[in-house]
Amino acid sequence: MFETVLIANRGEIALRVARTCRELGLRVAAVYSTEDRDSTVVRFADQAVCIGPGPARHSYLYLPAIMEAARQTGADAIHPGYGFLSEQADFAEACEAEGLTFVGPPPAVIDRLGDKSTARAAMADAGLPLLPGTIEPVGDAEAVAKVAADIGYPVIVKAVAGGGGRGMQVVSEPDDLARQYREIRSTAQSLFGDDRVYVERYLPAARHVEVQVLCDSHGNGVHLGQRDCSVQRRRQKIIEESPAPGLPRGLVEQMGHAAVRGLLAAGYVGAGTVEFLVDDQHRFYFMEVNCRIQVEHPVTELTHGVDLVREQLRIAAGEQLDVSQAELTARGWAIECRINAEDPARGFIPTPGLLTGLTLPAGPFVRVDTAAVAGGRISAAYDPLLAKICVWAPDRPQAIARMRRALAELSVEGPGVSTNRDFLLTALDHPLFVAGTHDTSLVDRLTDPHPREES
Image (cartoon, rainbow, N blue to C red; front, top):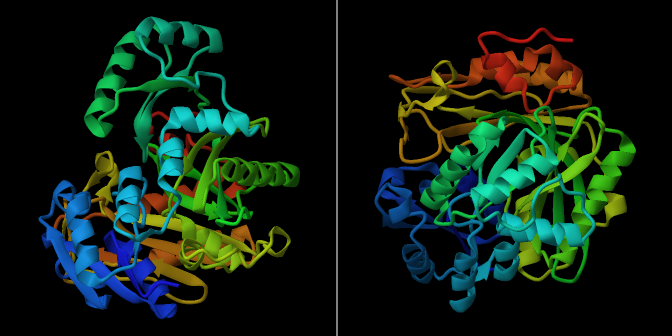
């Protein structure tokens, strides 16, 4: 095992990783921007290094500063968390070049699976089902129009390098296709420095279900069930639960085995997530691979009793998985709600500011992952995630009731600061969510001023 782990991230995930490192007896090194000089993880760490000013491109995304911090702290491993550099093959290669262990998959695997076109090809080769569409990037508007005509509207045009709900556009009418194709390419170039796109059939009312996988460097792989992430605003998740409600047992087993098969075939090492869409006929289709720990990993930890960050570190240190698939059994039900500093009434715009008061929920089977404290500041420079409230219960109705209670205990105060707490409560109360028959259209139903009648 390592001696010192540098955490190349901020906020709740940095603190989450630091806590597991401390439990393993590892020395914790943190990095921080000038915006985060008073952050919780800086106070928690054994050593912390300032890596630049607030904007992420000058700090958390600035690779030279992070590598220098690793040298200063004597780190022998770097944990990237999620976001920022976590899925950058160049970062993993730089770690290797400096003799540092990157806590994640090999650079070549990140490069292959981070490119949605080559990822789709790899998963197709491994026998995973894909939605009708293209595997190779589409080079011009005429080719896109031909593909769309062949597979039928609506279609979704996606950036090959996209992620986090960015770099995609649904097209419902042929007359809109050429313009939106040009717009998404321009957006992709601006966001990711890569204007390549591909096209696939769009499922307006699909379930977003993902499978958590662990693979070691000895050819072993297991999955830890599924998470339903269908409640999304702007294609970013806000409620996640494990297991996914209402899926036939046979389908669940198929998805789990397919996810492990696909990642092992790709040479994956570490914790990864394979994301699928599930239609109303319970057919599943590969969507993408996330080569990192997920924001929603706590619900899997709560149902399976496995510390996923601990497993990431063990695997990165060359150890074999110490659990078999037969030993991994889900118990009970877990739900996570992301508390964002944002205003749902104004299109979910972020509401940064000073936190003058913060009361977090507690009580039986409630877990809160956060780095926020009263007196701290929510920065406009970063994602508005304030906390993740997670609950566990023996079954789904009890988990929903426990989450309602936990959200009711939450109090966030500060001038101009709003949260999505009440919106989350409304979502939890929606009949489709209560019945476990909701899909990715739920937030649209809640925000549409002229909602459709439920059938």
